[in-house]
Image (cartoon, rainbow over all chains, first blue to last red; front, side, top):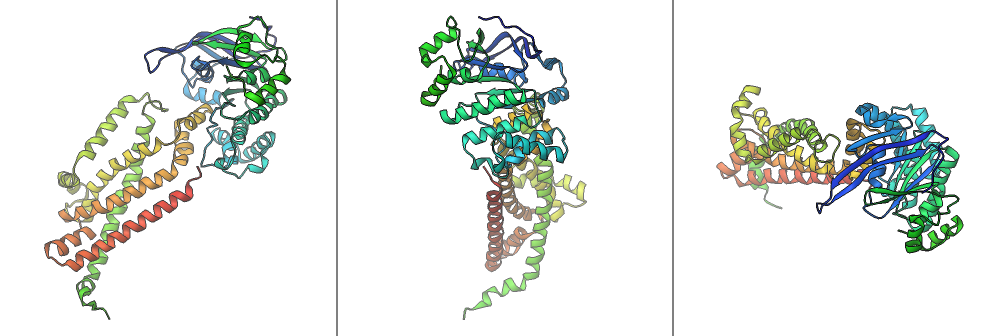
Length: 274
Length: 226
């Protein structure tokens, strides 16, 4: 485990946040009380096998899952202590994208991107301006009047990213954003996410079970198993510290290709997964 | 040429048929309006308070509303018609005629449509509703910006089913003097064995049902962009 210096302000602070469910077979699943710190400007990955609690942990950050215990603090605001209207206002500053995109099918691409702004009561001029800017950012300006059903999976996820960016959030939550996409599309989408972080300064918390995605994009990683964060790893240029559990998983399940360039290559070829 | 004299009875009764059609349309207008406004709101409320939805914490309301919907829908319509007739008299001042028949019709339509709406809304993917929640949408915004938009073709089809069902229910209302096309069929066709009138009214009802169904499906298809 690597100690990480904390100079920038924390974007996310989870303090003892946990959530237990009873699974269909009566087994307890969910997330054990966990601390998590994500610095502003960072891309933080959460990796683990299916059922490890990664998505639950992510969904605890914007309280789509209500924690049984603990506190969720996003950019200094304690979400767990907010009233429903306050929480809704806070959520408007947190973008989220999903594995299955979750676009509104009966609305055009432009109307999908406008959606969070309409909810927030933005002016028509601001909506028009943001829709144009965000669609151009994801390279889909020419699809503004298309229906989602006319787009490919990669394009749908780009629309979802544009929609998440429309209200200018400081934080983007990404729940398995590339898991429904083929490796080549995944690669181009990771570039978009990298741009979101680099050019717009948006902090990203990303859940994935794809090792190559994590290695290509993330600055730091939390490794989860059975509802607990068992390891926190810093990735310097995609290099996984050799003594970490993550490195062990990599050799076991994902092949050993420690540089980002090779990781990208591996992604194209086999889409390495844990 | 065909012998058109068999339709003499029908031609003679054309003014009656016109009046009956007007009465049927009046009953339909009243009960469909009540169903859409009251039943629609009830259906949305039941959906929102069901497990896993935005207002799931109002579980008691959900249980109660579900029970009431089931009870009213259990009544055979003809029994409901008779059972609420004192209530109809209280509201519209009489227990016969299309206005009086509109009371039990509305009652049945409200709870029928509530159930249809609740079930139609279940077709909206949970993930889409969740995405709206994650963007900070309020329950009311989710209703108007997500549920009613994403389910719109299903809602049109639900309304089509409602309309067709209550066209035939309104004919049953004829039994208690409700008026309308069904009343005509019963009075002339059934009690007086005037088969031509019976056939004419049935043809009229078939044409109405076909048109409603065609229009509903056409509109639903046009609005569906999924």
